[in-house]
Amino acid sequence: MSFTYPNEEWPADAAVEAIDGTTDEDTGLPYIAKGTGPTSLPTYEVQYNRRQQRQNKILAGWRHGMVVSEGNSKIGVYPMRFTLGGYHRVFEGATNQAVPDDSIKYVYLDSSVNLQIADSWPSDITSYVPLAKVVTSAGVLSIEDMRVYAGFHVSQIDGPGDITGTPNPTFHVDSDGSGPKLKNNTGVLQIRNAPDSAYATIDAASINVWGAEAIDGSRNVKAGTVQLDAAGPGPKLKNNSGDAQVRDAADSGYAAIDAASVKVGGTEAINSSGEAVDIVDDIVSGEHVANQANGTGGLPVIFAASLTSGNTVAIHNNSAPFKYRIIDAWSIATSGDGGSWKLTDGTNDITDTVTVTATDKTMNRVGQIDDAYHEIADSGTLQVVGDGSNADVIVYATAIRVS
Image (tube, rainbow, N blue to C red):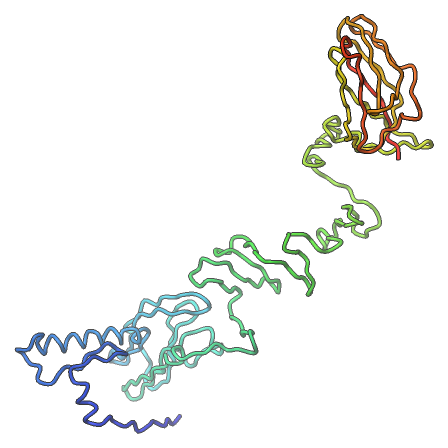
């Protein structure tokens, strides 16, 4: 290859004389003033050595990785710090490296930071750092510095935002080694932690699959059906008009759930022995009982109220959780004081007045229920009205849910 070099012009004498005793702003290097000598302060020697010291520090960085002749067809390489494959690397230098006579060799650092003296450059220019071309002929060795290819380098771009990539199977985010890795695992993209010992977390506004949002910003799975173990295939989690279903792989029937226990509303409902637990603790309550139907029947709901000295107790005060119908009521005396009570809807009597036998532990039941007032509306009122002085009883009212 034949190079063309410019014929650079020297500045005018007057321009050079004008900078006498000044300091170059770009480099910080001084121009020693005319007349500086051994008796000057600082002396010429001090000023000259200061300038050389500063200049040498400026040049030191370009010495990194420089290939030099050590005589007798041997070369040495200065230590070097560089970046390759997304990692900061360090080459500790080399000496006494023999080069065969009458040969052309290419000196470079490979991706493992090993010094190579080869017959040609590697085909992949992203996999090495070029250092020098060394030619030996009849015992004479010449070196052409090739580090400029690494020093003056622009990343290859295929199109807007498209980088050609890396020859390595992993790409490290944060080249200091602390960040996660993008990894090719036989064609599958993985996001791994820095030591590649586990998967890394993805923090994103949402996640798209095949161009459609799969997980939104609230961590909701957007797909109507999620296949577990798709290669298996396994069961499906399915949204059916707001109800979560566990279906078989073909979506032809329900799938079994194998779990240590099952919770409803955060409370264990079925234990590890398959037994229903905590039924009274709002797992199965009046709110979870179906409305009564003549042909199918239903479960009754029992409300309780404790009266002391014949006081009035509101079981529901404009707060009935659902519509229901009173079908029975009775009391158990907790003292021998006697007295009376009845059920009302806050305005109208639902039952007749029940006289409490003046004997502790005695049960007394209503004799009549008024079918004009026996239904309590949703958010309605149900009261146990005592005689105001004597009755010490627990009153139980049986009801069924109605529509």
